[in-house]
Image (cartoon, rainbow, N blue to C red; front, side):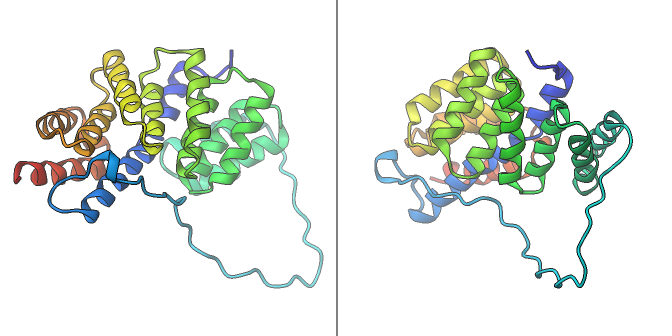
Length: 264
């Protein structure tokens, strides 16, 4: 089993949950724009194609007049890892990435450094780079649960729902009691139009951790899509009662949908 401690594991996975909620928000918004005011049924609603988060295009670098020599970092990789993790937890992604890259260059087999570098790349929208780091972790340790789950989030962001499903299922094979991963597997099912399977996953997540907000948002999404108005209202209201301040975008979307549903 991987060496990532339980606290870091849950902090790292938790930090990616808002990325997953955004996918559900985009689905809800797409449905509302297609037909108003009634929500669409799954039989007539194709799931939207989600593109990876856009990044700012940078101008091409000037042609060098002399060869560029890459400086190899020196020092203790554990110190770079500790600094990178601290920056990442503080939301300082730009400062975290160089430290974590240095740790990986100095100690390529330091799985924790690769794992947190993958998280930093996700935070900066560099999903292909994140995929590379998580895959490198899993090549060395196939039982690294959090690498499976976070690679699944990367695949969701890249609109590769089937690959995401496989990674979440691999994580749950290692620990089926992880409510966050049960929820994220549900989102992978939503992206594939498998609404009943998604509903089951969200219900499993809630049974494992009733206070986790995101599965309630997921259930609200399902009920909205299948036009079960009262159940959708109940699910979104429950979501709003579960620490919604952690994700203000999802809170605003839940309130918007509730206003729509109650006005019908």
